[in-house]
Length: 231
Image (tube, rainbow, N blue to C red; front, side, top):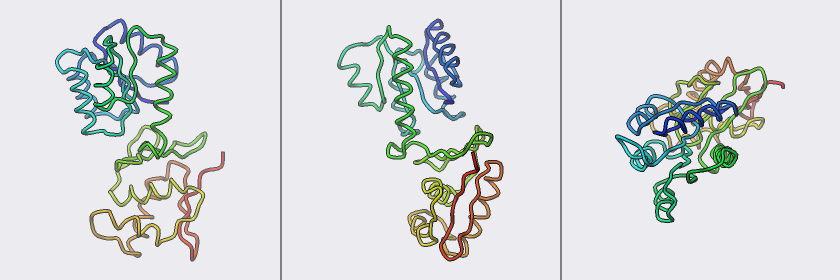
């Protein structure tokens, strides 16, 4: 399930989009103007944004440019009545991932939205890494920003903890050597990048992942292995 922000000043369209996308299994938060959208983006985590350009208070284009400076990897689908080529090019150049002109069919919107969210989850697109199984809270790690979540709850991670967790999740089921971890840490700021400190960070992550069913196992003489719970 994805958490979507719908920014649309037309009450009827906003309500229809909210109802349809909720029925499709998404969690939806509506906003009727650009200022409200900015406030929500600062206070909540979203997996995608449906953004109208013709908004009161703060224009949709201004929101898009503002958003791209703060959340460069967040997927954005523009919804607008502006169907000129120049408008589409301007929106895409400003950082939109896709563009849909009004009126549109709900089937096409859902297809485009699903494709956009699917692309965003790929590490190559700077999305997120997910791990878990039925009956356990899924772990999701942002591949670009130092953020991670267990289910819908954010994890409090330091920069080094996030770097270590990202490495383990991206190689889940494979042994990661101490040397590989320390090498990945070389570009991270802060102290405590030595081999002894690594055990401290592993211990911290084990505690923070306690509710996920995941296990970080020491493989003697080789390194660390992130194990998923049995399905």
